[in-house]
Amino acid sequence: MVDEAMQTANGQTGRAADIGMTILTTMRQMGVSAIPRNYEIFYEVLTGSNQALAVDLVSLSKKPSQSELDDLSCKHLSQNNGQRVVEQVRDVVAHELEDIARLLRSERTNIERYGELLSETRDGLADPRLVTRDIVSRIASVMAVATQTTLRQGRALADTLGEKTLELENVKSKLEEYKKLADTDSLTQLWNRRAFDKRQAQIYDDQRTVMFGALMLADIDAFKGINDRFGHPVGDKIIQTIASLLRSNLPGNAFVARTGGEEFAVIVDGVSEDAVLEIAERLRNAVAQASFARLHPSMSAGTVTISIGTCMASEADGAEDLYMKADRALYRSKISGRNSVTSHSSLAAMNRAGGKSWMLYRSN
Image 1 (tube, rainbow, N blue to C red):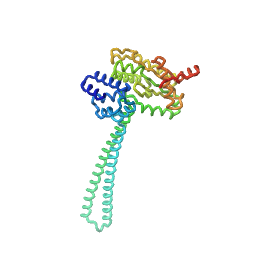
Image 2: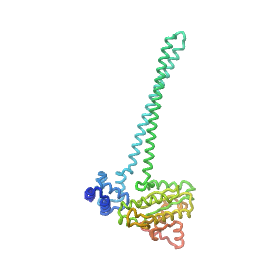
Image 3: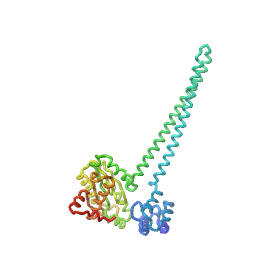
Image 4: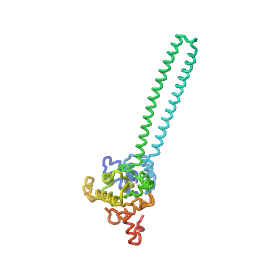
């Protein structure tokens, strides 16, 4: 099936819409979830950009699991080749440090020889009766040459060490750039799920962030229907647009990540619950009022909306519990008609008033 689709796609070079439809059709036929990271795999395969990935994809079952697809992504797509990059950097650093150690050993030998020459000269001049003007002249000439040579070697060493230091700084800079890339979502340039997991765990390292920190989970409403109607390229643009709206409507110290296909997470510090709800409503309104007509003529303001669930860190026992409670609040927003904000505290109040938890009936 993949082989046939590749032939179709290769015959449609330059026709992005046809390729996009081919990708979408192939994913549907194989029972693959229509999420961006899967779309990236099939785009690479069906456009002939990654033959090795194509071979591995064909070797899978007719209906590959998400874990199998994620394994392919980690193996073949560049942003997931973290271990290889780290190993390369480690090898470069080891090589540079060995060069520096060799240069320093060589310089130590040169300095030791120069010191021996000074000692011999001193000993030779100890008895004035044996020293003539000619001998002093020769000694001075030898010492001048030796000193100039030593100074020249020292300057050369300093220059070389400076170059090596610059090279190591460049390696360090590249490693820092990689680390940032490894924690960045390639589609939106927001933080990714890996970075979010680390940041969320840090909330409970400090009592202040526990008292005045909060988690917001946002999800694009009916995104599968949007993808089906307008296509994945438009869906990706919608995700990018919403990412930009989140960035521009959040406090400067907020941490915002894309944690899944159409899912986002926001961590805010130093806020009350009222302030968190105000921020969440601002985000919801910004998306609801945005026009996506530039992406497709049928998309006016209100075509795309988000639902949000919030939870204060003080209401949870840890990072996992915090995420679960915010997710339950998000789900309540979804089943209540979408395009709304729900807090965990309001859910807790509803449960106390109702005597039982509607959350028990959430399907996984």
